[in-house]
Length: 366
Image 1 (cartoon, rainbow, N blue to C red):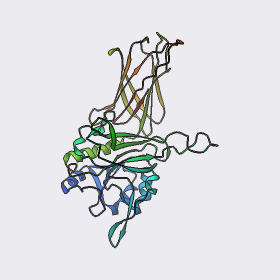
Image 2 (image 1 turned 90 degrees about the vertical axis):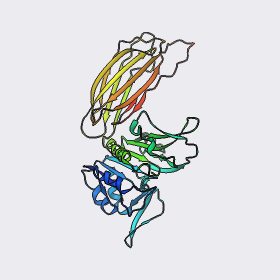
Image 3 (image 1 turned 60 degrees about the vertical axis):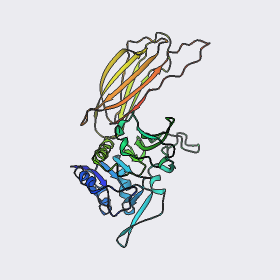
Image 4 (image 1 turned 45 degrees about the horizontal axis):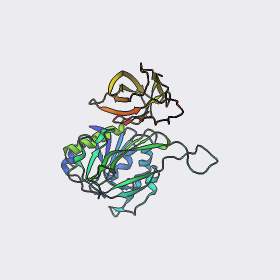
């Protein structure tokens, strides 16, 4: 039993959406520890927890808030299902849980300044994000519902002390995991998002939010597997990776130097395998396999491919793998890089961008 994963669910506690049936909870209890509202306060104070799953949407027991906030500051995993997180506190009154008015004070402490409702009207279908394939083949578990747009405040420090406002580094980044697609193929909503904390009070914490009600179609065997897989995903912590060249532009026949750097914001060391491929006019001209590791110490590695730049189209493809219970492709990124000639009559073309993400996490930028 995965006792490092704790799921908060209470039959007597307020709930958002359709409640899971007994069969779903029976399957879940074999894979994680399920606690009630009365048990939540003492349970989250346990240092052995790796992930907390909140199934009650915006509702939470007010008497457990300090312990919940303390847990999130440890940089461990968190999964939230249904509605705006920590929006409606509840307290016991004559043996029953009573809801209070909606409040923003609690989730604002998590850098979520506000959450605005997003209409489901333009959504025709739901698609997972292929760059972070956590929800791959799980789209059918969800119905089209109203969701919420997070307004984040993740920059709290100022790079210029004497000026007003926060102009310092971002403490966290947000990415869509499940997208609402309109009839004309536009991305109009993100019912499920990922927040990864690289700095600040919640450094290392990976938070997964499903900001819509779940219906009976989710409470099945596949839904159990998905929920537990999301929880394991958040326990991996945050690792940041960068892929970049030594210059933004080059003269003809120059050779670029590629730099790959990574840093983990969780404790311990994790091994990664990078498969790097450069294609010239869609034909592979350079391949390299790089084995490396991520730790709290910045790891920087560089190499110079046997490649002379010219006006041909150059495409980068990087795939990152990490050994887990099942082999998983974690990152795929690609971009086009056009060689730049320093001639007075030519404008400088924009450099291509590589961006990808994943499973055990990483951010890949060039």
